[in-house]
Image (cartoon, rainbow over all chains, first blue to last red; front, top):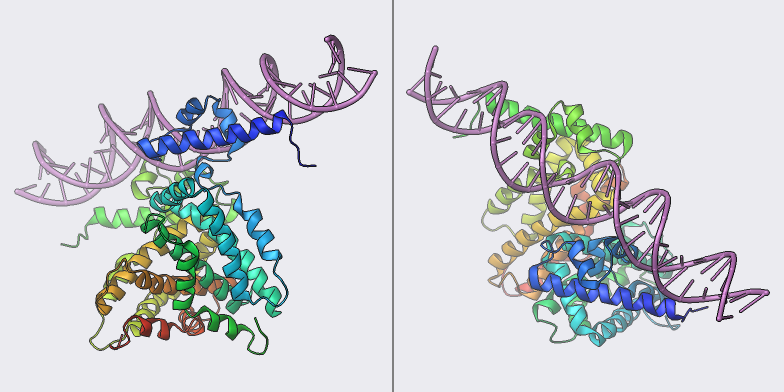
Amino acid sequence: MSPTGLRERKKQKTKAAIQRAAMRLFKKQGYEETTVEQIAAAADISESTFFNYFPSKEDVVIYDEYDPMMFAALASAPPGETLRQTFERVIGELGDVFIADSEVMLERAKLSLEEPELRSRAWEEFDKARESFAGIIALRTGREARDFEVQLAAMTLIAAGFQAMVEWVRLNGKGSLLELLVKALDFVSYDEVLARLEPKRQV
Amino acid sequence: MSPTGLRERKKQKTKAAIQRAAMRLFKKQGYEETTVEQIAAAADISESTFFNYFPSKEDVVIYDEYDPMMFAALASAPPGETLRQTFERVIGELGDVFIADSEVMLERAKLSLEEPELRSRAWEEFDKARESFAGIIALRTGREARDFEVQLAAMTLIAAGFQAMVEWVRLNGKGSLLELLVKALDFVSYDEVLARLEPKRQV
DNA sequence: CTAGATTTTTAGAGGGACTCCATTTATACT
DNA sequence: AGTATAAATGGAGTCCCTCTAAAAATCTAG
């Protein structure tokens, strides 16, 4: 089922080429100052093709292939794992991928946080993650996902994650994202927040 | 110094008229489906004039006259007030204004949360507020504003505020925004978070 | 290996948000 | 009233993005 023909390989290559060309231009002359026409030219494709690969200019930076990973990681919780452990594991796994191609990731994270337009857009992604987490919390605690406290717990996690990422970028990628996250979660005593959701059961 | 001539009055009226016309159209036919050309026509002004009053279409919804209020409220902390009290007071004061023109505010809050484009944009505003709060926290605790824990404390507050707002909208404006905020802050044990910042001093 | 089917690329037209600038109109000041 | 000042306007232009129809590339069957 996973296609592997020439066609598919070319698509991957094109997508990567677009992203590389775009990031190079963004870095050189700034995000706003770069037009998608220029990106298309640099990647040697037409403007139409650019939009075949990315729904918007923002997505060249924001687009992450990690959402599916996150879902998978969330779903694959071994029995007995606490929510806190699940979250650390998930973000740890994603963080590992971040590190793997960390040069690119750091650039993208930097841009996402520094360009106002992208920064607000980045929150859409965090928002999606928040919903996922809320879903998991709801599932494990037997509450509704829309429950105020469930939402608060999910949001607190996301907020910590966001700040961990900000700090990681501020440290220029030195240090471990996961470590920063753990530090953040400890600071807001996240264990207690989770415990408060379902006092009688191990969460 | 505060101008009060015919010119100023007309400007206020025009701005209000634009906002009213826009919100009416947004509600009737949706945000994206409404063009600023239509808004301008409905408000009986030119498209150019629209952009004289609002830098972007988003700002018609997002724009709040509350930022200055917030700064003022933050600055006017009576001596001896704890940080937690300051925050509650500030958001309480703003909340009161919200209630005052609550019909409009609820509509605007709803739109801001429901339209994806606006929702991410709304985070820019929260982000600005976060910076302000971080500044205050830094000031009162004698730390740097960029300090990881200061940032976390500010972000946690904003996150709670955001969720309180979401819940408020979900309840269709019934109930007190301030009450929801207090509930949220309690849930994340915000007092302890603040206390952790400066164990030796009353914050 | 060739012909037909499918997918990708592309050019072009067009809409809508927004900027810039020059001109006109409305308010303010003396 | 007459001039200074500020606001409103029209129009040209840029950029992001959508849609469509045609051209090019790739795949599949015979």
